Amino acid sequence: MTTTPIVPVLPDTQVLQRLDAAHFLHPFTDHKALAEKGVRVMVRGDGIYLWDSEGRKVLDAMSGLWCVNVGYGRTSITQAVARQMETLPFYNSFFNTTTIPAVELAAKLARIAPAGFRHVFYTGSGSEANDTNVRMVRRYWDLLGQPERTVIISRHNAYHGSTMAGASLGGMSGMHVQGGLPIPGIVHINQPSYAEHGVGMTPEEFGVHAASWLEERIRELGPDKVAAFIGEPIQGAGGVIIPPVTYWPEVRRICDKYDILLIADEVITGFGRLGKWFASEQFGIRPDLITFAKGVTSGYVPLGGVLVSDKVAGVIVAGGDFNHGFTYSGHPVACAAALENIRIIEEEKLLEQVAHDTAPYLKARFASLAAHPLVGTAESCGFVAGLNLVRRKAGNVHYQVKFDPGLGVGMICRAHMFDNGVIMRAVGDRMIIAPPLIMTRPQIDELIGLIRLCLDRTLEDLERRGWMR
Ligand SMILES: *Cc1c(COP(=O)(O)O)cnc(C)c1O
Image (cartoon, rainbow, N blue to C red; front, top):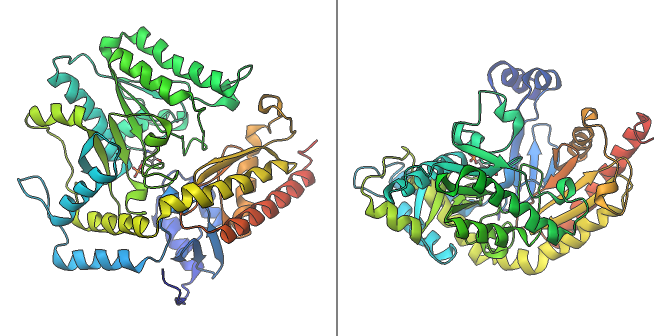
């Protein structure tokens, strides 16, 4: 990691804000509101920190967007990318051709993937990878003489990307109402959220119960119509929803019973976020397909893909042409970035560090936030964590009193975080983090201190508004 501070010439923030408002349509953004406020311009990153155009330093507890696993400022990735760009900036893999980084990365992924995965299909993003999944599972059943198996079951409040198929697989109602989604052939069951649906049950009982919704839906649809079930091991964008340990093994059992393919969307949970290469190993998911993106390159260059199990790859390979692919499938520069990123994770033993040292430490420190008067629950798994802001606390999560969602308490809290030098994301009134895997114990202490300070500021703010009564 670089330690020499680079002091960039600071640009004129107001000029950039005006140009941004005039020309840049941002993802998932209320543009009128943003134009009034003025966008924040990020100019530099190093380790777990960012600096904006006013020279303010921020601790990035979201790893960019769940992706900068090895942190900012990794010159060895920059160099690997530059070398590849100078040698061969692009070639496709359509016409019986390949490139060296694409082959090497495929072989590397086969080594770090769970047992029984030896093939990869490359895409440019997680959304494209999930589109690939839809096409691949339907092709799979078609080749096996069961073309009527087309339906894919997903979950409400899931996030699987923003393309037509990705947004349809996802269960975000705000996305579905814009543009007539979901597309046909995709249905949703409830998410395994103990806080939302688990009243009157232990978490373990609830995990089995939540999995039973899958069996119920399979029976309603008719098992011979169902192609696959897709889920994130831990829901990320939905608010870091950690399912009970009983959930995934029961889902696997049900998929086996009805011969349905299981897709684990590991775009967030892959590449060390939970202390292993893939969370599927931890949760006993035994998927047939694994979606990846984000952490594969630590976000330095866009790359995504699908890891394909031997069971599915055998059928696809034997089936002749699979008429699907992207110009940038296996982009050599992206693959070179991924290879160096994976090498760093291995060399610095980041999986071991997270699993045995820093994640247990984060878990204990983050859980201590539950003592704060605003916090209902605070839980983590690996390097993702979330806490609920509540109006009145109670020992049992189901008896806590929430804020009126219209008040936007989560967004108020997020603004205090942002103003005090820490980036935390708000999903409703749930505040979530996914820090870079390189984060050390002293940095975890710094993060928890900042979060506590900002919770205090938020509480004072809410009291002034009279919302705590
Ligand atoms: C981010 C994300 C995606 C979409 O990836 P993009 O690269 O933004 O298309 C898909 N699935 C999950 C679980 C994600 O978090």
